[in-house]
Every structure is written in structure tokens, then in C-alpha cells.
Length: 170
Image (cartoon, rainbow, N blue to C red; front, side, top):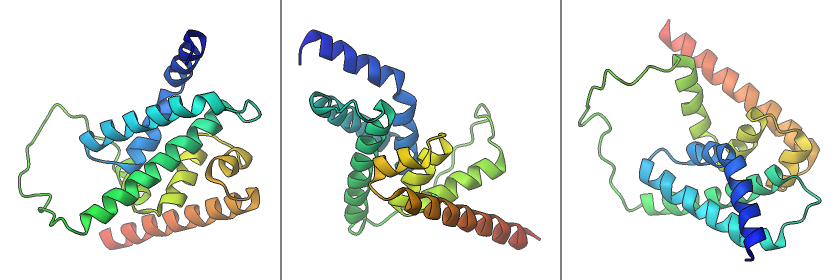
């Protein structure tokens, strides 16, 4: 890659690093896995830059790469987990008063998003980031009308989960 191209891709990655972090955080909760996934996404963006087609927005192109890499990584992790016996999460709990508490509903929303299938999670991440249906369609490889339908169904599913949770707390 020539110096101009190198400088261009570094600048593009720097300007859009928040996009990468959003995708990574939606697909991984372990810090080490997040670091690995971030590096893999950046590597694939750099490799793909030579073939970048300026007919699509840079962010759409980056989302497509980030989501494809994340979904592939997610599948690898899920298949590996078949052979791993997880330890109970509350086995060891370290209290840290310095950590600021997040809004309880936001924490719950993040948990609900983690439960979504990979494609729906990808669509929701892009939707919440302000991408339009066409951009989401181009990034995930489904029709624009299918994006609209899926967003509507995801919203209904999330509302239902929040309502169920409220009813359980009563």
C-alpha cells in the first residue's frame, strides 16, 4: 500500500473508530475478545481498502466488513463454547464503588440486544447509530423492505421483553 493510501485508510479508521467499537461491543463482552475482534476488523478493513468502491458510503462499507468479521468470530466462539463448561458468573464478585452505575433500562437493553440473533443485532446497531434502511441493506446484504420489516419486528420484540420484565417485577 502506498503512503497516500496508508494515510487515507488510517484517517478513515480514526474518523470511524466509534463504528468499530459499537459493533465489537455488541458481539463481545470479554475485554480480550473485544481487543482481538477490533484488531481483526481493522486488519480486514486495511486489506479491503485497495478494492474499496466509492459508490457506497465509507461507513456502509466499514459496517459491512465489521459485521461480517464479527458474525464470523461470533460463530467461532459459539462453536468453541460447546466444549467449554462455564463457571458461574457470581462465583467471585469484586465490588468497585468507582464504577458509575448505568441506567437500569440501558443495561437491560444491552442485555436484550446481546440475546438477538447476529443479523438482527447488526441491523439494530446500525439503526440505533442513525443509518437509513438503504445503508443497512447494503451493509448486511438484504433488501431495503426486509430491513424495515426486521426493524419493526425487533422493536416489537424488545418492547415485549421490557413489558415482561416489568410484569415480573410487580
